[in-house]
Image 1 (cartoon, rainbow, N blue to C red):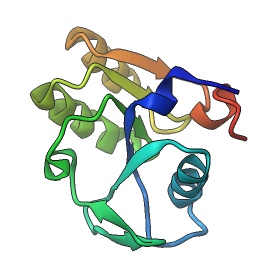
Image 2: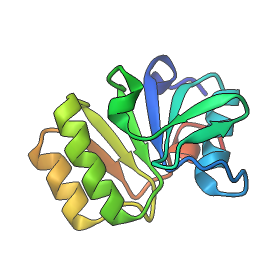
Image 3: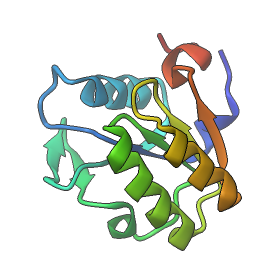
Length: 125
């Protein structure tokens, strides 16, 4: 399945060096599917030769879309950073959204998707 996101820089918030965690599985499958994806986790590290960044600002460039796979309270903080960087779109994986996060994103003019899995909606899983 072709998707508009394949030509975008995707920041995936919640990537761990633990390959059994969902964020890591998403990262590996997105990468294997040809997406340009940067992993974010405050603990940083590396997964399969790819650097994991501490935060969005550390990327050095603005991602086109952010995908969150973290607790809702972390998603709320990520939206603040997204606003500062001028990111226009955020996808909150099921379980990472909250009413506050959704409203905050909308109020900042950030396009928000929630209640849907990025991976299944884009034909990866």
